[in-house]
Length: 492
Image (cartoon, rainbow, N blue to C red; front, side, top):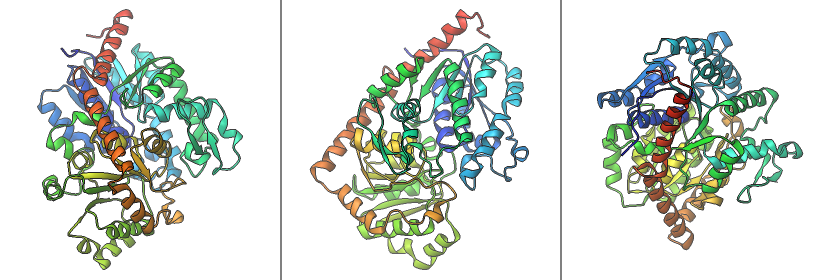
């Protein structure tokens, strides 16, 4: 039998699609065990997940959404910059971080009014003040980590070993010491930023790590079978409770939940499925570079021309279109030229729905961790095109450690707001060459497919009753219940 509970969890997701969606899934997973859930977020993010939460409430789950206004004017952010994907460039990230810190008092005021009172806070790594709030309420804080244990351990090693300080040039290669596998990358690929890491960035990171070290435990979006040695090592270095609960996207089993995750999709799900149903199994390449990543107009055109030249069926999700790119689509008649084999989605794509379709045979991805897990869960091998942040280390994990992907060849990060300045990193010839090699029915391709299909079975088993992630959710509930009982502070 599943572990049932009447605990009240309060969740604080980061204002970014890649953090909001897994936290929303975690909320539903806990509510399915009987917990009361309160998600506290901004009005924009609340609207993004409201359809999913409304369906959960209709199915008798105890979840509610509460909103807090982000004080953007007070910190000098432009109007509308209430989410990381709304920032014109990463130059504004520090101001957004200050605005997030200013939520502490209004959030605490909100918590004091909650009935039943909160029993546990689960909050994003980048909300360090929630550790202090939890302490004042005498309840545990559990930190949500968006990336997997491979990335988290790599970053821990990079910072604790001070190896970055020993490397002079951004493009110099380093071997991260003491890891279960040899991991050799450039300095700039570890930081995932073309700007380097300044004192303010380090200050934000250090504050978050200190708060994490003082927290009760960690929830990590991964599953133990995917990276067993890295889960074990990271648990040892953090020396606290660590719960691997993923891949959480697998809790979405109904059509609407698969199609409407976060922003409204730029294509009708039935139209999308009809198009996919007409293709051969494993023949379609899905192309999407994530919710934050942006490429220059010239780079997008090169990608489109490369896809056209391969003569394979594809779905291409095009986001953040410039006026020049819009003009190119219209004047060149690209969609008409590829109509027999190409589907262009303008805006957001129903990614989990697409990846889980048998017609999909590969995924050109930015290596965001959610996309990586969604691809693995669907048994789809990847062509890796990292852009920034954790994505270059995720690429190492996909290509070198798991051996389920092929690199497209990007070496340097492209920060939001800098894409036009950087220009073209991958030519149409590069796109064509890599896709043709990736789609070949050779021994390497066969091994990639077999390995990712094996991992997909493990991922799905982990989330089912009796699986490792299912058990870890039970363990989290038991541990929090026991901790509150020991402290004699069960609130209801």
